[in-house]
Length: 201
Ligand code: NAP
Image (cartoon, rainbow, N blue to C red; front, side, top):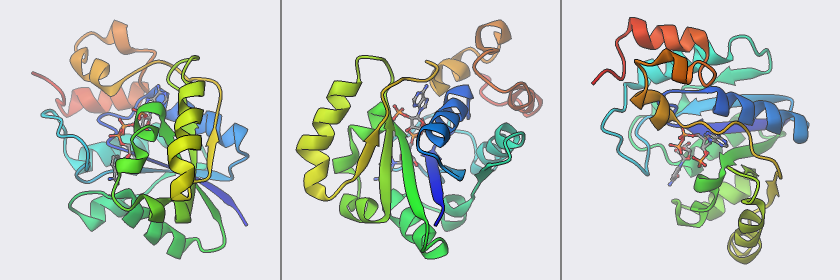
């Protein structure tokens, strides 16, 4: 029985915060591998500067290529339409029936989980791994888990340390100022963005 981490995201673009999230969870939860799953249409936001699924998938593949236990799945892109997590985890559980799935999420998404479509199915298929955004988040995440998510059947591992503070929005807004974002994004992903003229206003 393997322990498989799943990171779903819009990844618009993928950045070092996402990679550190995966490295941290892999270490803390003794995961055997981590699968990044870029959304087709995110169910919860409509970024006006959302680039195509193909570009977001390509950038994910570039960002993980030096990590042998990380991979990227196009399962949501192939399914098309809104990418509901319960559907993704249902499919993954069919592919990996004997393994334990950990759905990895940051604080903001974790704190909205009870509003997602069919949360009980999500909690039946996967353990939730939550990573705080800052060092004072832990209490809030744990209280929400105890009072709200447990009643819906969730099992969660709430990790106690944040990873690098970085956001995709900041990277998109400063795409022309490499000196501001160079520590936040893989150099090859940055070059892909420049070559394909992404996120230019
Ligand atoms: P995103 O912005 O690309 O980020 C992916 C994940 O990485 C998020 O959980 C985010 O946490 C986390 N993250 C990013 N930077 C981080 C950092 N520096 N430290 C810690 N965590 C960090 O993805 P997204 O658009 O929020 O989507 C997340 C997933 O939730 C997607 O798979 C989406 O389909 C799913 N979702 C599903 C439903 C549904 O099924 N109804 C509803 C909403 C979302 P934060 O949450 O803190 O940003």
